[in-house]
Length: 296
Image (cartoon, rainbow, N blue to C red; front, side, top):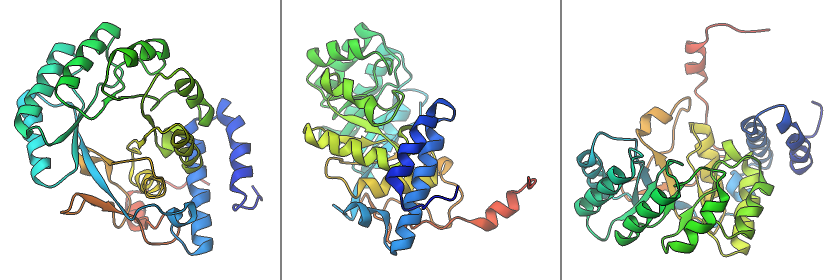
């Protein structure tokens, strides 16, 4: 309290020791708010303060866990036909079943459609290798989170045996420093994170630049809610080494509280915000309607 909100770097340094007492998500929320204040003070969108590298980015559909291979195939075709850039599978998390799902989706969408697999930390090493070799043959773009999020030893082994790019680091605890061992041990091809689980815009930008120094891609994870996704979009439009904007399905279930939310256009793109700061207007009328009590 009482500090200058434009002293973002100093405040960020003060926040991180508090991670022993509060969650990283709380640090991320404060950091995003400080960037919003800075953008409004300057009259510029956050991506302008960071240094804009693009004004739009392709969106990909990120599935729920669905009932059967046919459901995945039908959904993938629907998003392909709508012009989206890619489709990512969150499978049932049983290795043999997951391979069948991936095969069915590839058959349905053809060889030219971009596909990814996010197994959400569900396999041991032998299963991860088996599934990885299968989707490698199917031409998937990346293989995300096959092993436990802290199992860096087996990630090293897995990466040595597969050609498909592996993506880890979404949830390992901590901010910028948590990425160092993954890079030094060559345990992953791509880095991952979002403003909520990594401590805000400051961490994402630093990590993306760190990845860039190692010629690594940094893919931004879905933020979990509307404001976090807007913050993620600003970062995605300000860094060079990212390729897609993740839209977690069902899309509407993750949108709440804004007058105008992020929408994927008919060209399959989402566009950089243009208003100052986050450029997102909170629907305070909705907040008032949903208010149960006010604590003083």
